[in-house]
Length: 434
Image (cartoon, rainbow, N blue to C red; front, side):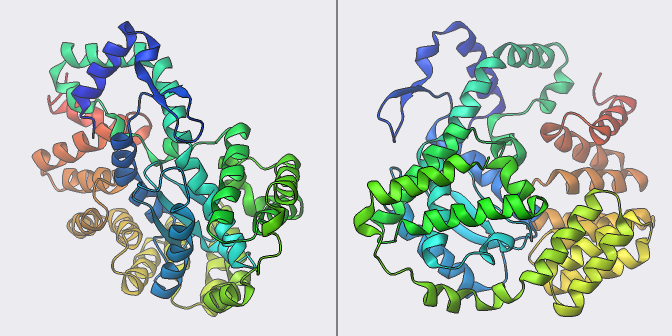
């Protein structure tokens, strides 16, 4: 992992060195490519940020057999990739929206919302193959390297600020602290086409039919036309087009025609995913609740979550979303109870503890909030939300030293927005920074 000082020094050196000094051979094309992020850095970023995103998606499903099945398919495809040495891992996350994503070190997630819409193991192999394609082609690392070149001057300015005001040095970030949103930002259409092509090559090499990729593209194209709201997150990170569907058809018929007759493994997929696919109507309501909450309609979100819970009374994501909706509706006591139910359902996932802590802050039960956020940080280390709000609760209790430490930790990760401004203002008031 690059330390903060190493990364800033690296940026300064990059500004004076020829750009070609940051070149590396692309594992897919075999050509030199601008690459300022090494494989170790990709893995470090992944290990730091992927748990945050998985938790934001309500954590992996508590279905060991389903996760094992997806892992089996994923690893079979990954072994055929250009980077089989990467530490690949696969899981189904509880999010109801349709998506799949990969972090640069090989951590890959498939949401409930998309897995419930697939119809064969070949489609699943295509889905994870596409994500493995992004890892193999180092799309995230290439995008970050390009962005780093553009921000060298800014990096030098941050270093100069740290030198002039030592108290702010701890507020400078490093490459491993890049947020999950940066690592999952939108791929280009060229990236998507390459990942599609690589994914089909890998899945066919693993013994699957290329028709799985064609059917996956057909399903996604249909969803984007019929119900664009259900896949808006997916297409924000993975731009969809008729061209991708046409390319998949062409590759299947021309390059991989001999593999088209392979069995599709529908029965095996149906057996492994039967319980999940039965949840699809509830997942659609839960996705609608998530959109309603994002649109500041907490009453509608709460009603939809309650409908979901009438079908799935122990659904962790529904309980967390219900607690969030109740918080947004100024129903802090109800939110506390819903969050406690979520924690009872899944005590190993951090979102229930985080929402419980937020409700405790709203009720001015600050000692309880400190316990909640400390537990959340045990489950999900370095989560910025937990760090800030624990600092806030400690601040309210008069523990200035502990609060200041949390505010400083928060500012290492987040340097803009109202909470960052609040944390920096408190540190200045206490003379911890100038």
